Image 1 (cartoon, rainbow over the protein chains, first blue to last red):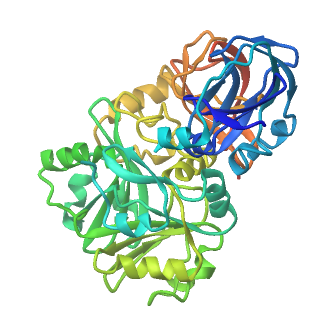
Image 2 (cartoon, rainbow over the protein chains, first blue to last red):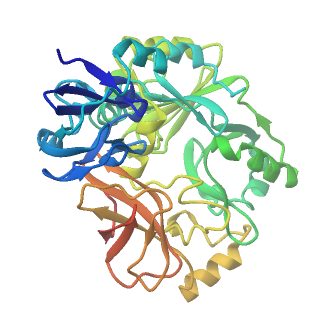
Length: 120
Length: 344
């Protein structure tokens, strides 16, 4: 069963059959404030774990989203190009950022309880 | 320990996010900066700006005060407000201030970060003054619906006696000024600590919502208004900041000779506004790489009205071209210098 996991850098991901869907946590969107522009990766581009893959521009500051795994982007959330505010209003569902394939599913990150303890 | 305004606990009930703003524990947003921005543009919102420095100065000190500000307060009528700048001997801006002029006293309002510097200026000139931060609150209520919503809320009917921009009235221990820092209509109220909660109750009752410093910053930028510490500082003159209109050369004031020299030679820095069509924000410190002259972004953010990235850039000398290239996080981005205001 796919469960949500969180990184210390506040990304969430859900892995299903070597495909990850990635976004940022509700806590992260709250800290960033209103997101007004987003730079998403190109489909088919490849990233190594821990490298910047998405750039979020908020009124307050700029933030990077890091790849949780070595991965190859297969889909991006095009709605965010015109409605970046979806990341603020619904970071876990409508505000997802990209999907990517991964080679070796290794257990990284924290489960929801661990993450909530981490941010509290 | 950060400073807190008298209304801190009241504002905390709205559950805002707080930031350290120049040593003050201030709300940066309540329901989100963009939402608050649009509330002020389309309806009405309020800001607790009690962190700003406030001085009560007897009006007989006006001739001395007039020597450290670049505007001529003697030409202003009583019961009006004047935006001005306190200058050093080189014409650099020690602070930009608003002065409310009454028959018997003046209220000078300065930036929170410059309260000490302004106190020093007033002291050096042997002015008689009283810092009134400890017993008053300052609330900015801004937006096109403010007057309609509040006109019957005070003993003073706003629509009759405070009907022009920059007019002010003093009655029953509160001062209401038709001033603000958002580019919208609205008022600023100076009120005793004893009564500020009552004012909050009125604002709640009228569904006028609290707004944070985040929206205050996007609103002032979109309204083409400078911020001290960003566009203005002690090495920038009003001429360089494009504020010739606040200078009255008919009176004697600190730094006057430098301003006259800059006006005649044109040899000085230039503050300009830019718009970016790409989906990226130029931030404070980003540089212009395309011009012969060096340029640095002083403020940049998103304009919710234009739905574009906008900002101010300070050039070391007059820029030749209207199209600039900004270096933003190692990307070269086109910007366009504009004349006039971003909106309005």
